[in-house]
Length: 162
Image (tube, rainbow, N blue to C red; front, side, top):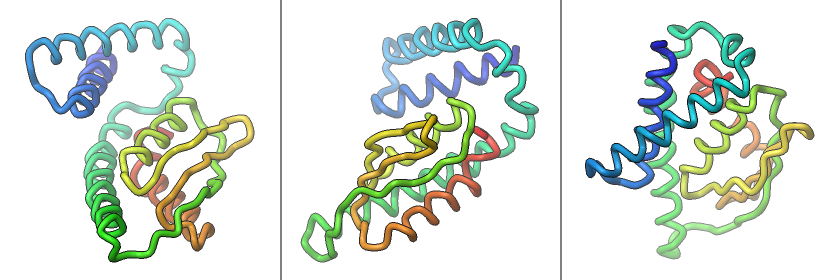
């Protein structure tokens, strides 16, 4: 039960962060949408929800995931601003990042986390082919982009969304 309530709270928080609003109507809408989403997801995949890992171990990784994502957001915003001001090189391009087979929630969370950062846009996630296609601001070294994405996944996300 605690896990379901936590999911509703986290989804509502994400909804409010995207809206950048704390108006009572927005909070209520977020709670309703999150509750419906959690209930429907639970009914569609009860076996995967039960096998997703110990709750406390996953919760312990949330601060690193949120804090790390904020650090990435600040760094990506700075890099984008420098390029937009004409002070930095712009070598944008597509990079294919191989992803390991993981639960749908893990792939989706990876895409959302990467998509928050302004210097990276998720073009496609193909779980069957095991790849995520990104458009990055600096694609001069695709291997470095892949290595950085895998490092960020391992350090920040894997514990919470395997």
